[in-house]
Image (spheres, rainbow, N blue to C red):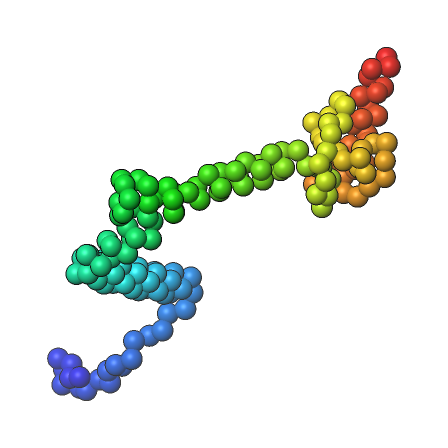
Length: 155
């Protein structure tokens, strides 16, 4: 490169590499932008295929869910895909009831009964009258709470 005074000056064609949190942040944003562009591209291509092959896609979906009205408006759905919905609801309610009533000692899977004077549940193995292990609440804490309750009742 030639300056105004006629002398030549070397030009650095390689940009300086920046180090530090700012350059890392820009690199992260660059990767994030590439990821977003890639996901949008894949989504767009998928939508184009669904639109082009809509008749086949809709037929497959309706056939899979049983809603293509072979024997009646909702008969296929409730005989197929929709018939499994109550099963999942029953399973979820059983899990919920179990989690609500199991022993509060960490690692114990048994069902528990309330320990008087405390908000805890303990199975027969971990109740204050029995020996046991720990959970998120240690057995010692349950024993102390039960003992304090008995002392309050006695006085």
